[in-house]
Image (cartoon, rainbow, N blue to C red):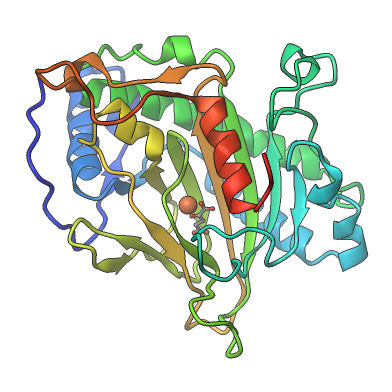
Length: 327
Ligand SMILES: O=C(O)CCC(=O)C(=O)O
Ligand SMILES: [Fe+2]
């Protein structure tokens, strides 16, 4: 049993080297899992190094974002997410509002997810947010390049889920059953410099927590990501070369009965005078998996503080809220 103790406010976000966890040595794996345990109880955010994703693939993915957003508007509008029945494709600035009650986010985006054909059982059953991606046609090898990146995100995502299981004293394969057909949602994001005429409290991405299990974020060297620590203070998550920022989504809070945090974060591209590009990948379990308190986190009275939920229903609900969609 992991006894609950209140978190300490973090002043910085740790960098966790995953390399020892790939050696197959179980005590090295346990040590990495323990680092994750501490970071998850502290901020819910950490950087990873030693993940094995080639530097060229990371740089190439940021380049892909730059190339896509540099296309003429009419080209981007050919894959407008408003043409998609599953919120995939191009999003102009101001389409999403991550912080309810604030003005819309200034970021510009491109969204993809699992590419499910029309005869996939989920698509036939009308499951929300399931369907086909819209791929831009006039960018050479866009799809192949994105898919190569996503394959690596799946590898890292699965590995992290194994470490998170171990960090909670669960068997390393605890999540295998719910990762048969994991959902992912990938975004390319562009943040222009913070405009002087932005509305009150209008920033690149408004304060929010992520909805799913884990987010694997690649950011360029511009900076602007900020994270709220346990004391309520905002601390910055500056770019660190060859790392990803990992943050834990709302499902981890349910899974751990609040032991691990899913922190607020936001983006304001304030100081650079340059555009900022980032690529978050949201890695979530199977659509119909019910996220509930793990046995090692169950309070003594057997009544967790958070309601269980299916992955898909929660994500569909968050799409409705942040895009102002009606049910
Ligand atoms: O662009 C970033 O650094 C963060 C984006 C983010 O938080 C999100 O898309 O959920
Ligand atoms: Fe986020």
